[in-house]
Picture 1: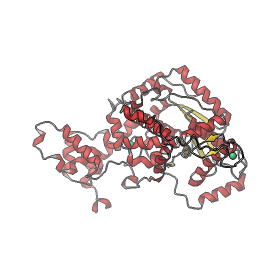
Picture 2: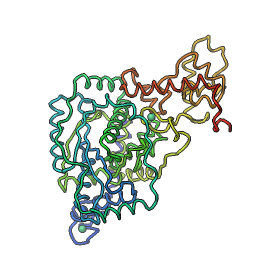
Picture 3: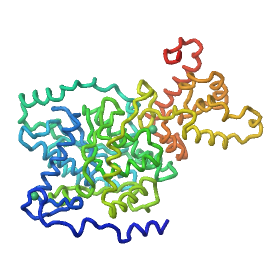
Picture 4: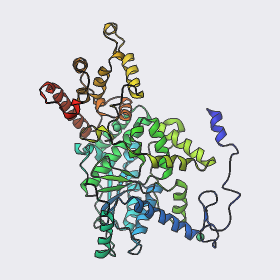
Length: 497
Ligand SMILES: [Zn+2]
Ligand SMILES: [Zn+2]
């Protein structure tokens, strides 16, 4: 392994250095100030124009954010989300024709408690960011991650979204906006100075116990991602925002794409890395920074003094191999250093992905944690069911059980123990009762494959926040009830086939 790592630092292609022309490739006048890719040297002015154009082009191409819509910018303090904030400011200051037309607000989630920062340390970070946000004039919310413990169960349900807009609706809305008051500098409300809610020490401890129950950093990071997203969506919903902008750069998304595959999230890739993510239904997550590389963002922030505030994360100062996500990140970044098209190649792949709108789109078959459609109803010949069979085999060691019919010949019995009663109803009849007699369906049966792996890495499921546990109970009870009355139900149309 060490040898492989050494090779990355060896003398490889260095396209960027020698062939740089000293002139800007765009205006061909000013001298170049920044080289983005090999051959693409821009002067200061052209670089700014290119950067700003890219943001508007990304929003314009996707036509998802309507004029006058309230959009919540999720700013972590890092370079990418702070750059996104400055692009929104830039866009709102343009003349009416080029102006961005939505109403922005900002949310910052204070995760200091997860890395054991002192109250004083957290207060200082919040103050630094407050100064940055105040300067924008946008309304902002400072939310400690501890609030995730008080969320309602509704956050893990996908709420019905707005009806599909017709093709011409976007243009009509823009025209209407231009006619009415395209010139006013509106934001999503007045900037108010509400002090951030007090964080109770007991809450911080519960949060730490929750994350600490994950035995690996990989699972801990996954848990944190899930909790953060729930809190973001809940904050947006309760403050009336219908879109949440995330600051993921294309470098970050390339890392996310590869690590998601390693984590068994292949089925959710389109949601996890696409421009828009509609898994929550009424609240859409969008990623307008997905065309910018981390390098471009760093150059821009430096040249145009975009402020950012460093905040430590779970993987700060840990070794490369501490988690799958961290290892993937250092792999991609090292590779990118020597092969400058690595990130863009991976990223282009993510652009082509689409979520399969299969069976689970209707109703409740969504993962309790990541709220994506369940991918566990896979066919018997899938890698997923192969994993399950080998897991079952290694669990059934007791000699008494070995006399029973071998489990691998009865595919129907696999579905029960894993997918719960709900899906079982469609398959073999005898399987359910036999599985049910031995043990109640576990919480894991409500999760997608990848979230099952995360939960498996936890020492206890009981430390999960109440809103997750009570929703789990509700779903398990419902599927149990359905199982009990199954014989009295009229068959669904789906069952007839
Ligand atoms: Zn130029
Ligand atoms: Zn999941």
